[in-house]
Length: 403
Image (cartoon, rainbow, N blue to C red):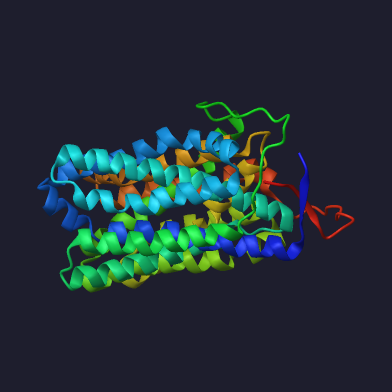
């Protein structure tokens, strides 16, 4: 197959395009999360039924993620990402249309399935751009996801405050985000398989390397999910904080994560993935100890901020390491994504179960232990390390196959 040359300017443009796709993906999540109460009322489901329906999001993602590599191989990276991001943005409309539990479960399954496939495709392209630039960019890409989620959540909060029907809100949001996502895909790298390249399996278990890398992501996402869902409750119930201060703690945690990811690439490029994650594990464990031992809301809020700072870049580095861990990057990334999605699903409910059996302080002891586990497991991310010197290519141009 004939080849086209990507010069460094085109690769840098592709980086910004993928970053825009990440922001669009995050904006869908933020837009949905703020209207869950409206969706619950519209579907006439209780808290337990809502939790059951929301679990179908992770189930759908886990089932669909292994298919992303096959789709990319069949259509090429640009066309595949364009189609998958459009399916994901349009899936935002489905939950608000569900009139009962059964249709809500189906809507959440499709919502999660499209989210998972788009997630794998955009992370695989992010890793490819990172390889061609020969420097860490994955943390910044995930920072753009966090920024998009905050923007989507802010717009959703405004819509909820105005009493807007979620069907109208999500319809408009889906239309705008679809246009933005499809437009951004115009400048991503268009990678095509070579003629002698074997297509990936339609469905395969993740390789062993992905399981080890996924264990690192599991620890980070568990701490993130526990903090997002339980930080406000912790301040309210254990430290008698006001509702405003409790909510500010959760917002502060999200902002810390977003800012740390946006600037994290500088740290990774300087110290490498392994040392960055080990140091992050120490910071996160210290933040967990502050939360557990806190007697004042300010101490606990500082602990949650430190916890967010410590775990912020871990998941991006897991995806980067997975993409370079074997001959099938999409399969490895899908495996890591499946593990992290599962962690995000079980963390809130497990924290609640432990708290019910003991108390919330014991629950965050568990979070602290898992956060410290990052320092032990960080070595498996060596595949994503960029500290060791490399030989520069003789030309600034980077070859890539023609579509």
